[in-house]
Amino acid sequence: MEAEAAITPGGYSLYPNGAWGAGRRSPGHAWRARPAYARVMDHPTQRSVYSAADIAEVLAELQACGPDPLELRRWAGRREVRTALVRASRVISSVRLPGKAPGGGWVEFSLVDGAWARTL
Image (cartoon, rainbow, N blue to C red; front, side):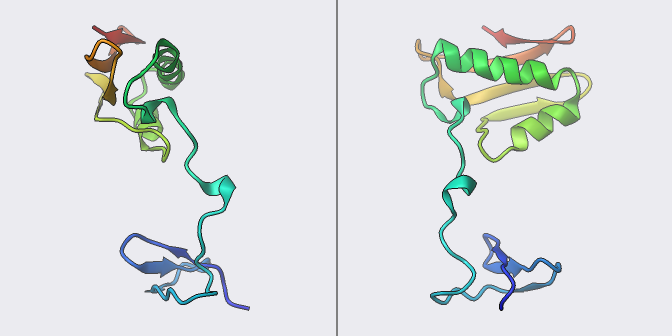
């Protein structure tokens, strides 16, 4: 039985034992379409126009990150999260989403005095 391997964007595979090898993509091999549970879930940041509920959900997730820049980077690095700009440092932290607000403006959040707030 062949070991299951994960294929990278460059066409190389990483086997469970950590070995790298050129990706072989023949029919019936270990690489198949992603199963339903592995697909990227729908996240409010993936919309092109955000509703008030989407903005509130993103703000709640940012509040959960708190003032820690590392937590913000982890949140922004998740597969389902889409961002246009992330500044994460001890001095300044902000997030701009790629879509627009219903009025057409950017949706941006900033960390002010240890709490996340939407920047107008």
